[in-house]
Amino acid sequence: MRVLGIDPGLNATGYGLIEIRNGSQARLLEAGLIRTGQKEPLSRRLGVIAEEIRSLVARDRPDWVAVEDLYCYYTTPKPAILLGL
Image 1: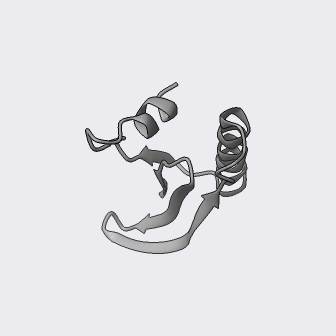
Image 2 (image 1 turned 90 degrees about the vertical axis):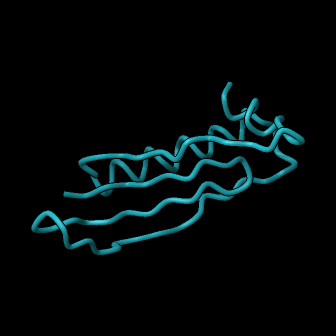
């Protein structure tokens, strides 16, 4: 079984692909970052992230995808609001 984990972020979205065999042996197949330009429009940044994730799913064909819960500090809620659009 293959699982793609995603850690969402506007500047850098992290991902990791693991393979689980025999129900308990996990092996890391790939990990990386999807980076976007801070000066790019929000629509462009979200588009880049979406396209890269689509490419990962199409290429690696995971059985499951897990996305980390979005959190933010109360002093900086804007990133959470932007990602939740």
